[in-house]
Image 1 (cartoon, rainbow, N blue to C red):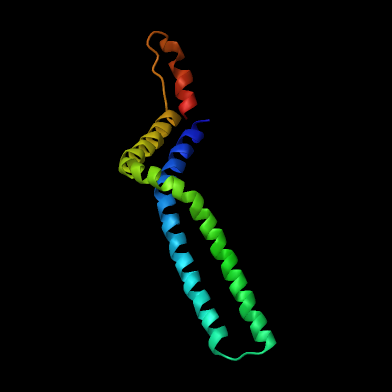
Image 2: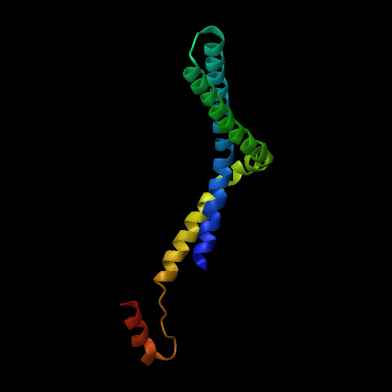
Length: 131
């Protein structure tokens, strides 16, 4: 149950940090695919090739276009989160501190002890649990 709290906080932090990076990385890959497609199209336009080479070139273009489309589709969804996550960037320091505090608190809870106030005869039971 308590693991969920820490995992949720870590998930939030990773999303705030990761979404803008992923969007930017996708944009870079899309541009790379565009440039590579242009290379292949110019190869088709300006060189001679047989049917098998032509098929290979068209297959490469198709594969690149499909990968490019997947990245573009993902970015069309990510763009809606960009502004929100960028506004949250300023809270990352606080979130990291909260995660650190949660981890510290969990460690304290695992080592928790109790000192009897009135019933001193029960204290030995608590000492046995710690061992």
